[in-house]
Amino acid sequence: MDRRSFLKYIGGGIAATASAATLLTSCKPKAAGSDSAADSTPADSTADGEMTMRTNHNTGDRVSLLGYGMMRLPELPDDADEDPQTGLYDQEMINRQVDYALAHGVNYFDTSPAYCRGLSERCTGIALKRHPRKSYYIATKLSNFDPGTWSAKASKQMFENSLKELQTDYVDYLLMHGTGMGSNDAEGNSLNGWQTFEARYMDNGLLDWLVQQKESGRIRNLGFSYHGEVEVFDRLLQWHDEGRYHWDFVQIELNYLDWFYANEINPRNTDAAYLYDELCKRGIPAVIMEPLLGGRLASVSDDVAAQLKQRDPEASIASWAFRFAGTPENVLTVLSGMTYMEHLTENVKTYSPLRPVNEEEHTFLMHIAEEIFGLKTIPCNECQYCMPCPYGLNIPAIFVHYNRCIKEWLVKQSAQEPGYRHARRAFLIGYDRSVPRLRQASHCIGCNQCTPHCPQQIEIPRELHHIDDYVEKLKREGTTF
Image (cartoon, rainbow, N blue to C red; front, side, top):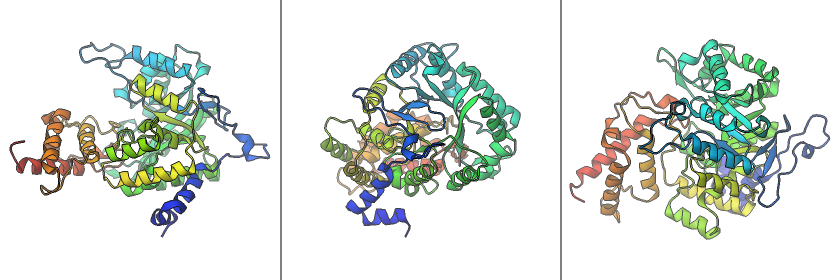
Protein backbone atom coordinates (compact mmCIF):
# COMPACT_ATOMS: atom_id res chain seq x y z
CA MET A 1 0.00 0.00 0.00
CA ASP A 2 1.45 3.39 -1.01
CA ARG A 3 1.64 6.38 1.32
CA ARG A 4 -1.44 8.09 -0.11
CA SER A 5 -3.54 4.94 0.20
CA PHE A 6 -2.24 4.37 3.72
CA LEU A 7 -3.25 7.85 4.84
CA LYS A 8 -6.70 7.38 3.38
CA TYR A 9 -7.03 3.96 4.96
CA ILE A 10 -6.22 4.85 8.54
CA GLY A 11 -8.37 8.00 8.48
CA GLY A 12 -9.01 10.10 11.58
CA GLY A 13 -6.54 12.31 13.32
CA ILE A 14 -3.32 10.49 12.39
CA ALA A 15 -3.92 10.67 8.63
CA ALA A 16 -5.17 14.22 8.78
CA THR A 17 -2.18 15.34 10.82
CA ALA A 18 0.22 13.67 8.41
CA SER A 19 -1.42 15.18 5.36
CA ALA A 20 -1.68 18.56 7.05
CA ALA A 21 2.04 18.49 7.64
CA THR A 22 2.61 18.35 3.88
CA LEU A 23 0.21 21.23 3.31
CA LEU A 24 1.19 23.48 6.20
CA THR A 25 4.93 22.95 6.52
CA SER A 26 7.03 25.86 5.33
CA CYS A 27 8.44 25.30 1.85
CA LYS A 28 10.80 28.17 1.22
CA PRO A 29 13.52 27.45 -1.33
CA LYS A 30 16.98 28.74 -0.67
CA ALA A 31 17.90 31.84 -2.63
CA ALA A 32 21.20 32.10 -4.43
CA GLY A 33 23.87 33.31 -2.05
CA SER A 34 21.67 32.85 1.00
CA ASP A 35 22.58 30.86 4.09
CA SER A 36 19.00 30.32 5.13
CA ALA A 37 16.03 28.97 3.22
CA ALA A 38 13.79 31.38 5.10
CA ASP A 39 15.70 34.33 3.61
CA SER A 40 14.34 33.63 0.12
CA THR A 41 10.65 34.27 0.70
CA PRO A 42 9.53 37.37 2.63
CA ALA A 43 6.61 36.84 4.99
CA ASP A 44 3.09 37.30 3.67
CA SER A 45 1.40 40.62 4.26
CA THR A 46 -0.78 40.35 7.35
CA ALA A 47 -2.20 43.85 7.78
CA ASP A 48 -5.95 43.82 8.25
CA GLY A 49 -7.71 44.57 4.98
CA GLU A 50 -4.50 44.25 2.95
CA MET A 51 -4.02 41.66 0.20
CA THR A 52 -1.69 38.80 1.09
CA MET A 53 1.35 38.84 -1.17
CA ARG A 54 3.82 36.11 -2.09
CA THR A 55 7.33 36.60 -3.43
CA ASN A 56 8.62 34.83 -6.52
CA HIS A 57 12.18 34.04 -5.49
CA ASN A 58 13.24 33.82 -9.16
CA THR A 59 12.51 37.48 -9.89
CA GLY A 60 11.57 39.13 -6.61
CA ASP A 61 8.05 39.80 -7.94
CA ARG A 62 5.59 40.53 -5.15
CA VAL A 63 2.50 38.74 -6.46
CA SER A 64 -1.01 38.92 -5.03
CA LEU A 65 -2.18 35.62 -3.58
CA LEU A 66 -5.42 36.13 -5.51
CA GLY A 67 -4.86 35.95 -9.25
CA TYR A 68 -7.46 37.12 -11.75
CA GLY A 69 -8.34 34.37 -14.23
CA MET A 70 -9.59 36.05 -17.42
CA MET A 71 -11.33 32.90 -18.62
CA ARG A 72 -14.98 33.63 -17.81
CA LEU A 73 -15.41 37.31 -18.59
CA PRO A 74 -18.74 39.13 -18.14
CA GLU A 75 -20.91 39.26 -21.25
CA LEU A 76 -23.22 41.92 -22.62
CA PRO A 77 -26.98 41.61 -21.98
CA ASP A 78 -28.82 39.34 -24.39
CA ASP A 79 -30.51 42.29 -26.11
CA ALA A 80 -27.26 44.24 -26.63
CA ASP A 81 -25.45 44.46 -29.96
CA GLU A 82 -22.04 42.86 -30.23
CA ASP A 83 -19.09 45.19 -29.90
CA PRO A 84 -17.00 45.30 -33.14
CA GLN A 85 -13.82 44.84 -31.11
CA THR A 86 -14.77 42.65 -28.15
CA GLY A 87 -17.81 40.76 -29.43
CA LEU A 88 -20.22 39.58 -26.73
CA TYR A 89 -17.98 40.66 -23.87
CA ASP A 90 -18.82 43.66 -21.70
CA GLN A 91 -15.60 45.67 -21.88
CA GLU A 92 -16.94 48.42 -19.63
CA MET A 93 -17.65 45.90 -16.87
CA ILE A 94 -14.30 44.18 -17.45
CA ASN A 95 -12.57 47.56 -17.03
CA ARG A 96 -14.47 48.23 -13.80
CA GLN A 97 -13.57 44.84 -12.34
CA VAL A 98 -9.91 45.14 -13.33
CA ASP A 99 -9.82 48.60 -11.76
CA TYR A 100 -11.31 47.25 -8.54
CA ALA A 101 -8.87 44.34 -8.51
CA LEU A 102 -5.82 46.56 -8.92
CA ALA A 103 -7.10 49.01 -6.31
CA HIS A 104 -7.39 46.14 -3.82
CA GLY A 105 -3.97 44.62 -4.40
CA VAL A 106 -4.67 42.04 -7.14
CA ASN A 107 -1.82 42.29 -9.65
CA TYR A 108 -1.65 38.91 -11.47
CA PHE A 109 -3.85 38.50 -14.56
CA ASP A 110 -3.99 35.13 -16.34
CA THR A 111 -5.28 34.77 -19.88
CA SER A 112 -4.86 32.68 -23.05
CA PRO A 113 -5.46 32.89 -26.80
CA ALA A 114 -7.98 30.07 -26.30
CA TYR A 115 -10.19 31.81 -23.74
CA CYS A 116 -13.49 33.58 -24.37
CA ARG A 117 -13.84 32.67 -28.04
CA GLY A 118 -10.32 33.93 -28.63
CA LEU A 119 -11.06 37.41 -27.23
CA SER A 120 -9.75 37.17 -23.65
CA GLU A 121 -6.31 38.57 -24.42
CA ARG A 122 -7.83 41.50 -26.31
CA CYS A 123 -10.25 42.35 -23.49
CA THR A 124 -7.50 41.95 -20.91
CA GLY A 125 -5.13 44.16 -22.89
CA ILE A 126 -7.69 46.93 -23.24
CA ALA A 127 -8.42 46.91 -19.51
CA LEU A 128 -4.81 46.75 -18.33
CA LYS A 129 -3.38 49.26 -20.82
CA ARG A 130 -5.16 51.99 -18.85
CA HIS A 131 -2.79 51.36 -15.92
CA PRO A 132 1.00 51.64 -15.49
CA ARG A 133 2.70 48.53 -16.92
CA LYS A 134 4.75 47.98 -13.77
CA SER A 135 1.59 47.79 -11.61
CA TYR A 136 0.55 44.32 -12.82
CA TYR A 137 1.86 40.98 -14.08
CA ILE A 138 0.49 39.38 -17.25
CA ALA A 139 0.39 35.61 -17.60
CA THR A 140 -0.60 34.10 -20.92
CA LYS A 141 -0.12 30.80 -22.68
CA LEU A 142 1.00 29.15 -25.85
CA SER A 143 -2.30 27.39 -26.52
CA ASN A 144 -1.22 25.56 -29.67
CA PHE A 145 -3.61 22.65 -29.19
CA ASP A 146 -4.71 22.33 -32.82
CA PRO A 147 -2.32 20.41 -35.12
CA GLY A 148 -2.61 23.35 -37.50
CA THR A 149 -0.64 25.44 -34.97
CA TRP A 150 2.12 22.91 -34.31
CA SER A 151 4.55 24.30 -36.86
CA ALA A 152 7.25 26.64 -35.54
CA LYS A 153 5.89 29.44 -37.71
CA ALA A 154 2.30 29.09 -36.50
CA SER A 155 3.25 28.77 -32.83
CA LYS A 156 5.60 31.76 -32.96
CA GLN A 157 2.89 33.79 -34.63
CA MET A 158 0.52 32.85 -31.81
CA PHE A 159 2.98 34.30 -29.29
CA GLU A 160 3.48 37.47 -31.34
CA ASN A 161 -0.29 37.89 -31.63
CA SER A 162 -0.61 37.54 -27.85
CA LEU A 163 1.75 40.48 -27.39
CA LYS A 164 -0.25 42.50 -29.89
CA GLU A 165 -3.63 41.71 -28.29
CA LEU A 166 -2.28 42.38 -24.79
CA GLN A 167 -0.72 45.66 -25.98
CA THR A 168 2.63 44.90 -24.40
CA ASP A 169 6.15 44.10 -25.55
CA TYR A 170 6.81 41.44 -22.91
CA VAL A 171 4.93 38.80 -20.90
CA ASP A 172 5.67 38.33 -17.20
CA TYR A 173 4.60 34.67 -17.05
CA LEU A 174 4.42 32.49 -20.17
CA LEU A 175 3.03 28.96 -19.93
CA MET A 176 3.14 26.02 -22.28
CA HIS A 177 -0.56 25.31 -22.06
CA GLY A 178 -2.03 21.97 -21.03
CA THR A 179 1.07 19.76 -20.95
CA GLY A 180 0.22 16.13 -20.25
CA MET A 181 -2.89 16.14 -22.41
CA GLY A 182 -3.13 13.73 -25.31
CA SER A 183 -4.47 14.71 -28.73
CA ASN A 184 -5.07 13.64 -32.31
CA ASP A 185 -2.65 14.68 -35.02
CA ALA A 186 -3.65 16.15 -38.39
CA GLU A 187 -4.26 12.65 -39.78
CA GLY A 188 -6.48 11.70 -36.83
CA ASN A 189 -3.92 9.45 -35.14
CA SER A 190 -4.14 9.32 -31.36
CA LEU A 191 -1.12 10.69 -29.49
CA ASN A 192 -0.39 10.23 -25.81
CA GLY A 193 0.62 13.09 -23.56
CA TRP A 194 4.35 12.89 -24.22
CA GLN A 195 3.96 12.48 -27.98
CA THR A 196 1.70 15.54 -27.98
CA PHE A 197 4.25 17.55 -25.98
CA GLU A 198 7.00 16.63 -28.44
CA ALA A 199 4.83 17.62 -31.41
CA ARG A 200 3.82 20.95 -29.86
CA TYR A 201 7.12 22.06 -28.35
CA MET A 202 10.12 19.88 -29.24
CA ASP A 203 9.97 18.65 -32.84
CA ASN A 204 9.45 22.24 -34.01
CA GLY A 205 12.19 23.72 -31.78
CA LEU A 206 9.63 25.91 -30.04
CA LEU A 207 10.76 25.31 -26.46
CA ASP A 208 14.31 26.39 -27.29
CA TRP A 209 12.85 29.45 -29.03
CA LEU A 210 10.86 30.30 -25.88
CA VAL A 211 14.07 30.08 -23.85
CA GLN A 212 15.62 32.57 -26.27
CA GLN A 213 12.65 34.90 -25.80
CA LYS A 214 13.21 34.72 -22.07
CA GLU A 215 16.88 35.55 -22.48
CA SER A 216 15.94 38.56 -24.58
CA GLY A 217 13.46 39.80 -21.94
CA ARG A 218 10.26 39.22 -23.90
CA ILE A 219 9.33 36.51 -21.39
CA ARG A 220 10.25 37.10 -17.75
CA ASN A 221 9.18 33.73 -16.31
CA LEU A 222 8.78 30.50 -18.30
CA GLY A 223 6.72 27.55 -17.07
CA PHE A 224 3.91 25.20 -17.98
CA SER A 225 0.39 24.28 -16.93
CA TYR A 226 -0.19 20.61 -16.28
CA HIS A 227 -3.16 18.37 -17.00
CA GLY A 228 -3.29 14.65 -17.56
CA GLU A 229 -0.49 12.12 -17.75
CA VAL A 230 1.84 12.32 -14.77
CA GLU A 231 4.74 10.89 -16.77
CA VAL A 232 4.92 14.21 -18.63
CA PHE A 233 4.97 16.20 -15.39
CA ASP A 234 7.70 13.97 -13.95
CA ARG A 235 9.85 14.13 -17.07
CA LEU A 236 9.69 17.92 -17.26
CA LEU A 237 10.75 18.15 -13.62
CA GLN A 238 13.58 15.71 -14.37
CA TRP A 239 14.77 18.12 -17.07
CA HIS A 240 14.71 20.86 -14.42
CA ASP A 241 16.82 18.68 -12.08
CA GLU A 242 19.29 17.95 -14.85
CA GLY A 243 19.62 21.62 -15.79
CA ARG A 244 18.32 21.00 -19.30
CA TYR A 245 15.49 23.50 -18.81
CA HIS A 246 14.66 25.73 -15.85
CA TRP A 247 11.02 26.18 -14.87
CA ASP A 248 10.34 29.47 -13.11
CA PHE A 249 6.85 28.34 -12.07
CA VAL A 250 4.33 25.57 -12.79
CA GLN A 251 0.54 25.80 -12.81
CA ILE A 252 -1.34 22.88 -11.24
CA GLU A 253 -4.88 22.07 -10.17
CA LEU A 254 -5.15 22.14 -6.38
CA ASN A 255 -8.17 22.08 -4.10
CA TYR A 256 -9.26 20.08 -1.08
CA LEU A 257 -11.06 17.44 -3.20
CA ASP A 258 -8.15 16.93 -5.61
CA TRP A 259 -5.63 16.84 -2.75
CA PHE A 260 -6.11 13.08 -2.35
CA TYR A 261 -8.99 12.17 -4.69
CA ALA A 262 -8.06 13.49 -8.16
CA ASN A 263 -6.68 10.13 -9.25
CA GLU A 264 -9.62 8.16 -7.83
CA ILE A 265 -12.14 10.47 -9.49
CA ASN A 266 -10.31 10.07 -12.79
CA PRO A 267 -7.35 7.67 -13.16
CA ARG A 268 -5.80 10.00 -15.73
CA ASN A 269 -5.50 12.82 -13.19
CA THR A 270 -2.89 13.21 -10.46
CA ASP A 271 -3.45 14.00 -6.78
CA ALA A 272 -2.62 17.60 -5.93
CA ALA A 273 -0.66 16.48 -2.86
CA TYR A 274 1.87 14.77 -5.14
CA LEU A 275 2.10 17.63 -7.64
CA TYR A 276 2.56 20.26 -4.95
CA ASP A 277 5.12 18.20 -3.05
CA GLU A 278 7.24 17.64 -6.17
CA LEU A 279 7.31 21.37 -6.92
CA CYS A 280 7.98 22.17 -3.28
CA LYS A 281 11.03 19.87 -3.22
CA ARG A 282 12.56 21.86 -6.06
CA GLY A 283 11.50 25.31 -4.91
CA ILE A 284 9.44 25.84 -8.07
CA PRO A 285 6.62 28.30 -7.28
CA ALA A 286 3.15 26.82 -7.81
CA VAL A 287 0.37 28.74 -9.51
CA ILE A 288 -3.00 27.24 -8.62
CA MET A 289 -5.92 26.74 -10.99
CA GLU A 290 -9.37 25.35 -10.27
CA PRO A 291 -9.46 26.07 -6.51
CA LEU A 292 -13.26 25.66 -6.79
CA LEU A 293 -13.21 22.87 -9.41
CA GLY A 294 -15.15 24.97 -11.88
CA GLY A 295 -17.52 26.13 -9.14
CA ARG A 296 -18.32 22.65 -7.79
CA LEU A 297 -16.78 23.45 -4.39
CA ALA A 298 -18.89 26.59 -4.16
CA SER A 299 -22.10 24.69 -4.96
CA VAL A 300 -21.94 21.63 -2.75
CA SER A 301 -24.76 19.41 -1.49
CA ASP A 302 -27.06 20.79 1.18
CA ASP A 303 -25.58 18.38 3.73
CA VAL A 304 -22.00 19.45 3.04
CA ALA A 305 -23.01 23.12 3.01
CA ALA A 306 -24.65 22.68 6.41
CA GLN A 307 -21.45 21.20 7.85
CA LEU A 308 -19.35 24.07 6.50
CA LYS A 309 -21.81 26.66 7.82
CA GLN A 310 -21.97 24.99 11.20
CA ARG A 311 -18.20 25.16 11.41
CA ASP A 312 -18.07 28.86 10.49
CA PRO A 313 -21.47 30.55 10.01
CA GLU A 314 -19.91 33.78 8.72
CA ALA A 315 -17.73 32.16 6.03
CA SER A 316 -18.95 31.54 2.49
CA ILE A 317 -18.81 28.04 1.09
CA ALA A 318 -16.28 29.15 -1.53
CA SER A 319 -13.96 30.77 1.01
CA TRP A 320 -13.11 27.38 2.52
CA ALA A 321 -11.73 26.23 -0.84
CA PHE A 322 -9.82 29.46 -1.43
CA ARG A 323 -8.26 29.36 2.03
CA PHE A 324 -7.18 25.76 1.46
CA ALA A 325 -5.61 26.56 -1.93
CA GLY A 326 -3.80 29.62 -0.59
CA THR A 327 -2.39 28.07 2.57
CA PRO A 328 0.69 26.21 1.20
CA GLU A 329 3.63 28.59 1.34
CA ASN A 330 5.07 27.54 -2.03
CA VAL A 331 1.88 28.75 -3.72
CA LEU A 332 2.57 31.98 -5.58
CA THR A 333 -0.99 32.85 -6.58
CA VAL A 334 -4.44 31.24 -6.73
CA LEU A 335 -6.42 31.89 -9.90
CA SER A 336 -10.12 32.54 -9.92
CA GLY A 337 -12.31 33.18 -12.95
CA MET A 338 -14.41 36.01 -11.51
CA THR A 339 -17.26 36.72 -13.91
CA TYR A 340 -19.21 38.92 -11.51
CA MET A 341 -18.17 41.77 -9.25
CA GLU A 342 -19.52 39.94 -6.20
CA HIS A 343 -17.12 37.04 -6.89
CA LEU A 344 -14.23 39.49 -7.03
CA THR A 345 -15.15 41.36 -3.86
CA GLU A 346 -15.67 38.15 -1.89
CA ASN A 347 -12.37 36.63 -3.00
CA VAL A 348 -10.50 39.84 -2.28
CA LYS A 349 -11.95 39.75 1.22
CA THR A 350 -10.88 36.11 1.71
CA TYR A 351 -7.26 36.97 0.88
CA SER A 352 -7.08 40.38 2.60
CA PRO A 353 -5.36 38.90 4.43
CA LEU A 354 -5.40 35.11 4.13
CA ARG A 355 -6.37 33.21 7.25
CA PRO A 356 -4.43 29.97 6.66
CA VAL A 357 -6.15 26.63 7.16
CA ASN A 358 -4.90 25.14 10.43
CA GLU A 359 -4.42 21.43 11.10
CA GLU A 360 -7.84 20.98 12.70
CA GLU A 361 -9.55 22.67 9.72
CA HIS A 362 -7.46 20.57 7.33
CA THR A 363 -8.73 17.43 9.05
CA PHE A 364 -12.28 18.72 8.69
CA LEU A 365 -11.84 19.48 4.97
CA MET A 366 -10.39 16.04 4.32
CA HIS A 367 -13.58 14.54 5.76
CA ILE A 368 -15.64 16.91 3.59
CA ALA A 369 -13.64 15.80 0.54
CA GLU A 370 -14.34 12.17 1.34
CA GLU A 371 -18.05 12.91 1.53
CA ILE A 372 -18.06 14.82 -1.77
CA PHE A 373 -16.05 12.06 -3.45
CA GLY A 374 -18.77 9.59 -2.51
CA LEU A 375 -21.29 11.52 -4.65
CA LYS A 376 -19.52 10.42 -7.89
CA THR A 377 -20.16 13.53 -9.94
CA ILE A 378 -18.66 14.02 -13.42
CA PRO A 379 -15.41 16.03 -12.98
CA CYS A 380 -16.37 18.77 -15.46
CA ASN A 381 -14.92 22.22 -14.74
CA GLU A 382 -16.95 24.06 -17.40
CA CYS A 383 -13.73 25.14 -19.11
CA GLN A 384 -15.52 24.98 -22.51
CA TYR A 385 -12.51 23.35 -24.21
CA CYS A 386 -14.89 20.70 -25.59
CA MET A 387 -16.98 23.36 -27.31
CA PRO A 388 -18.33 24.00 -29.83
CA CYS A 389 -19.77 20.54 -30.44
CA PRO A 390 -20.18 19.95 -34.18
CA TYR A 391 -23.65 18.52 -33.50
CA GLY A 392 -24.79 21.41 -31.32
CA LEU A 393 -24.73 19.77 -27.88
CA ASN A 394 -24.16 22.02 -24.87
CA ILE A 395 -21.82 19.55 -23.15
CA PRO A 396 -20.93 21.62 -20.05
CA ALA A 397 -24.60 22.51 -19.40
CA ILE A 398 -25.60 18.83 -19.58
CA PHE A 399 -22.89 17.88 -17.07
CA VAL A 400 -23.73 20.82 -14.79
CA HIS A 401 -27.38 19.77 -14.58
CA TYR A 402 -26.48 16.15 -13.92
CA ASN A 403 -23.94 17.04 -11.21
CA ARG A 404 -26.34 19.45 -9.54
CA CYS A 405 -29.02 16.78 -9.37
CA ILE A 406 -26.53 14.31 -7.85
CA LYS A 407 -25.56 16.84 -5.17
CA GLU A 408 -29.22 17.51 -4.44
CA TRP A 409 -29.96 13.75 -4.24
CA LEU A 410 -32.23 13.92 -7.29
CA VAL A 411 -30.58 11.05 -9.16
CA LYS A 412 -32.37 7.86 -8.15
CA GLN A 413 -31.63 4.40 -9.46
CA SER A 414 -34.91 2.77 -8.47
CA ALA A 415 -38.56 3.77 -8.27
CA GLN A 416 -38.58 2.15 -4.82
CA GLU A 417 -36.19 4.78 -3.40
CA PRO A 418 -37.75 7.41 -1.11
CA GLY A 419 -38.61 10.61 -2.98
CA TYR A 420 -38.31 9.00 -6.40
CA ARG A 421 -41.40 10.67 -7.90
CA HIS A 422 -40.27 14.17 -6.83
CA ALA A 423 -36.68 13.54 -7.95
CA ARG A 424 -37.80 12.25 -11.36
CA ARG A 425 -39.98 15.28 -11.98
CA ALA A 426 -37.29 17.73 -10.83
CA PHE A 427 -34.61 16.10 -12.99
CA LEU A 428 -36.63 16.07 -16.22
CA ILE A 429 -38.16 19.52 -15.87
CA GLY A 430 -34.82 20.99 -14.82
CA TYR A 431 -33.07 19.30 -17.75
CA ASP A 432 -35.41 20.87 -20.31
CA ARG A 433 -35.05 24.26 -18.65
CA SER A 434 -31.26 24.09 -18.45
CA VAL A 435 -30.53 22.59 -21.86
CA PRO A 436 -32.68 23.10 -25.00
CA ARG A 437 -33.80 19.73 -26.34
CA LEU A 438 -31.82 20.03 -29.56
CA ARG A 439 -28.66 20.46 -27.46
CA GLN A 440 -29.26 17.54 -25.06
CA ALA A 441 -27.28 14.32 -24.72
CA SER A 442 -29.62 12.36 -26.99
CA HIS A 443 -28.04 14.07 -30.00
CA CYS A 444 -24.51 12.80 -29.29
CA ILE A 445 -23.36 10.50 -32.13
CA GLY A 446 -20.10 9.54 -30.44
CA CYS A 447 -17.78 11.34 -32.89
CA ASN A 448 -15.36 11.89 -29.97
CA GLN A 449 -14.03 15.21 -31.29
CA CYS A 450 -14.51 16.63 -27.79
CA THR A 451 -12.56 14.17 -25.63
CA PRO A 452 -9.00 15.05 -26.76
CA HIS A 453 -9.62 18.67 -25.72
CA CYS A 454 -10.81 17.88 -22.18
CA PRO A 455 -8.20 18.79 -19.49
CA GLN A 456 -9.98 16.46 -17.06
CA GLN A 457 -9.71 13.59 -19.57
CA ILE A 458 -13.43 12.85 -19.26
CA GLU A 459 -14.67 10.25 -21.72
CA ILE A 460 -17.33 12.67 -22.83
CA PRO A 461 -19.41 10.54 -25.26
CA ARG A 462 -19.57 7.73 -22.69
CA GLU A 463 -20.84 10.12 -20.01
CA LEU A 464 -23.34 11.71 -22.40
CA HIS A 465 -24.71 8.31 -23.41
CA HIS A 466 -24.98 7.35 -19.74
CA ILE A 467 -26.96 10.51 -19.01
CA ASP A 468 -29.18 9.99 -22.04
CA ASP A 469 -29.88 6.39 -20.98
CA TYR A 470 -30.86 7.67 -17.54
CA VAL A 471 -33.17 10.31 -19.04
CA GLU A 472 -34.85 7.73 -21.27
CA LYS A 473 -35.30 5.46 -18.26
CA LEU A 474 -37.04 8.28 -16.37
CA LYS A 475 -39.29 8.98 -19.34
CA ARG A 476 -40.28 5.32 -19.73
CA GLU A 477 -41.29 5.08 -16.10
CA GLY A 478 -44.15 7.52 -16.45
CA THR A 479 -45.71 10.01 -18.81
CA THR A 480 -47.18 12.26 -16.14
CA PHE A 481 -45.62 14.23 -13.33
